[in-house]
Image (tube, rainbow, N blue to C red; front, side, top):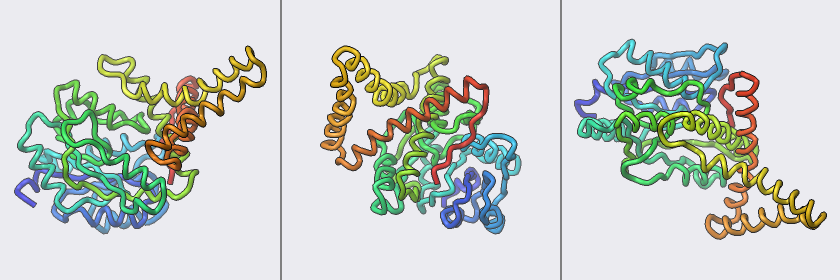
Length: 323
C-alpha cells in the first residue's frame, strides 16, 4: 500500500456468510481500519470478525434490516473511531478484495477531486458452477469509464457520501443507483475502472434462490422508481418496472381481451407471445439464460406487487434474502 493507508477505511456487511466472510475479512490489510456490520447472524460471523480485530456493529433486530442501513451504520461507527478517514470501501461479506484494489481506487480518488465513487471489476468465484453464478458474473461486467452508478462494492469519498445523506436505509435493493443519482445531482462523478476489485461468491445453485433474488430486484425496482419519480432527477428503473409488468399482466390482459373477442382461441396468444420472446432471447443469450430471464419477469412483478402492498398497508419491508 502507498501513503494513502491513513485515508482509507473499510465497512463489510454480512449475515451468515460463514467461510465467505472469513475469506472477505482476511483479504483486508491489517493496517486498514475495519468495521463489520452483522444482520443477526446465527453462525460464528461476529466472533470471527472480533478475532480479526474488526469493530463489530450488530444491527438492532427491532428495525428492518437492509444493506443500505448496514452500510450507513458501519460508516458512522468507522468515523467515530477514525475521523480522519477520507475514503471508505464498502464490501459485501460474500466478497474477497483483490490485492491491489484499495491502492488503485484511493489513488484514483486522490487524483480526481470531482469523483465521488469508484468501482472496479467484481467477478464470480465459481462462474461455471451454475447458470445462476454465470448470470451474476455477466451482470457484474459493466462498461469501463464514467458511469451512472456503482454496485455494493465500491470506494466512496466520505465527504461526498455525507453531503448527499448516505444511503436511504429504507431501500432493500437498488440503493446504490439511487445514492449515485443523488451524487450526480450534487455534481459528483461515478467511475468504473478497468481493474480487478472483488471476487464474489453468489453460491446460487437452485431456481428458488434465483426466484427470491428476482423478487428482491422487483421490490427494489418499484421502490426506487417510486422515490425518484417524485424527485427532480432521472426516474430510475422505469424500463425495468414496465418490462416486468408487461411480460406478466400485460400479456395476460392482451390474451383475455382477444379471448373476449375471438373466443377461447384468443387465450393461446399469451403462451405464443412468451414463446416468441423466449426464442428472441435464446438467440441472443442462449436458451437456458433466455428462459430464466423471462421467468424472472414474473418474480420481479411479484416483487413490485409486494412493494405496493407493503406501502399501501403502511408497513416496512426488511431485506429479502436469497441464500
